[in-house]
Image 1 (tube, rainbow, N blue to C red):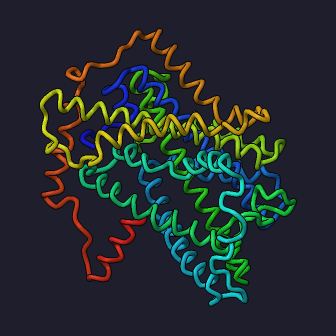
Image 2: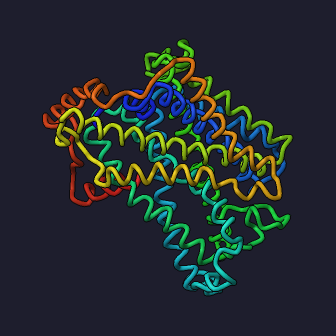
Image 3: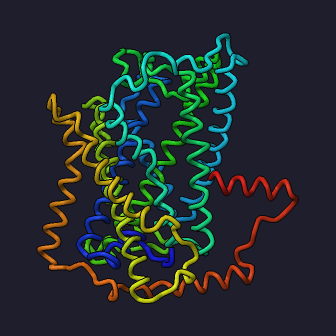
Length: 445
């Protein structure tokens, strides 16, 4: 929070912990979002099946890959503009979904009252403890993305003001969008619905958002919602390609990746890193040979576990950063924002990340499932091996607290604050209703 640097936490891991540790975290995060991007393109044919099953899966993946790639070629401005509209559409859709879903559950829309009857349909957790454990990977995948704030801070005009505001809004996003939408789905869709991906039925899988509208007799609205789901996937892929290319750029600038990848165009686009990352998404084309759902689950498992590694690295870097501040007798007042739960929040995050990463693939040991084991543990093995090899090759050591660099990059915030005070970054203006609308968009997008 006190430094504006390209690469964010991978640079901080190298600066506050150990060079080898930072390199592994950086490559892990690049691989994580490269896989997420690939997984999103793999999921696109699943969404398109709602309308047609004639077009080959690889054709859908290729077409939308080109769209996202073009958006990223034009730089951060193009990316930000696309994400603004993507986010606005998603926000409006989720709010409408929650309101309409509650009306459907209460019988105000449709010919059936659902209420909470599915909450009493059998016992809780029908798949037992293992079902809950297996869901951790997909849950972690869904929660990934909040750390993108740290990546984009390197291209913000005034990160000392913009980043803290964005972080504070995360709580409301989770409360309204994640928990609100899941709450509505739980009321209307039974856990064993034939349209669910793992129901065992041969019926084509349908998005739960579209299914809620369909159960309320709003089949036409289901088409609209499915289109919004497509936009959401494109938004995630757009963010994934942007973030992973910037991470690869940071690794190149730090000297731990091919130096040609550090080339940046006049628009600020790391074209080499962008192309390299986009090539990873070509693996989505194998969906024309392997069932898309199976590949999608393997990819998301790899990315989900990689997310735990990333969060461990972020918590470790912050823990060491705060300890270094204390060791060097620097006051917390110099920071634009502090984590109130330090050090317990850092320690809890590190422990929880390790535990979750280790137990997520427990159910794949017996009976043995090679695909599941690879999806859940291959990334962990590569991270450990990569750290050991890098450590032996570079002979790097953990940086003593008093030797940690807490100065480089910090002066940028002083300049940003002076710009803010001089009026370059202003608050929303206009009539009161316009200001309220703008602040709502700022909170939820």
